[in-house]
Length: 500
Image (cartoon, rainbow, N blue to C red; front, side, top):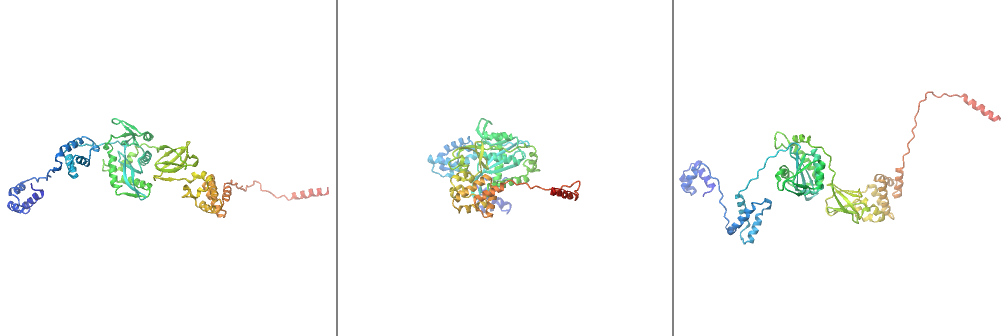
């Protein structure tokens, strides 16, 4: 069998260069009957690659075919890879290469009859549903490469979308993502289509039966959404958001992005959503844009208030007045040491609740094995141990106002300066930072860098202001007239008293 290149040469030499069959046969060292056959063919034959032979697999082919046939009846996710088949063959005595095994597996799968999966086009009414999914992307935050979890929302009718990034996929992140998405959309659809993620689905029943997570149901009930869970391993049931994940990965997240903070990253993603919606044509109607359909759908969406729910955990405060969560520690007031408290956890902050009252609040940190301090939480301990002010870890990077820092330098040069500084901090905690800083600045200006002077100035600043009495000129109806005769009366009466 001659190759396609030789057939092309025969036809070129005969039809382009007008050589005879004999001349072509001599030039290409071919039989004249072969040359004539290919010249007279009206349909150019397609190239057929010869079937590859696998001599090393000879005695193992029957067993391997049986394993590959059984694998065809299993879902793709449960099928063995060619590498696993190669390892099994080696255990049976196979001496050939891995490339032969992988090539045979590909050939077998290509020749095996399969039932193609047919996808049915879907139509969603305006305001009917949205689809949700997570994706994992690589991002550089503050110079450190890390995995980020991106929440994807997509309105099924208008195709408007929203994305926001988080460090993980926990419940508080899911709640925050929904709050931001529905604020961006300006309302809520009737249904939400999800996969069977653990934060949403507790257990999978028969068919569409699901036992949903209690906290997830609280989120759905607040927004009055009907949650719909897809069939396991059936991503086409939320195909719009699945395609969105693949498309945005290529268009936005590759090559790797770099930002200083998570806030900068999410601000960038929000701008990308707004810009792409404005210009993207609608898939079902190229004459209109996603932005136009989105504006129409927004009028149908149900207005809503933000969900205030959060993740709650009970923890115990240790002897250092610290509570731990997600490999990070947070300070609480000293009086709650060695007691159990509640942590109300959201995507952005941590609240510490004791006896029904909020006793501490910190911005949430995702730095592992680190500690977030509020130095004011340790003031009661400082009053008993003022020496800890110099080397105590909570006070090493305390961002005190400049007048307080300057006054601290003066106080620490004096005997018992630590105790005096603690007393000054107690005054600030009692009377408030604003009046305390003002009093410290006045004391420094008057060259009296002492706690007593600060306390005196605070008292003066807190003295009630005496209102100024205002005098008014009231016009008289009858202007006064001078009567000088009255003085004569006084003189006569004075003379009488003198004679008496």
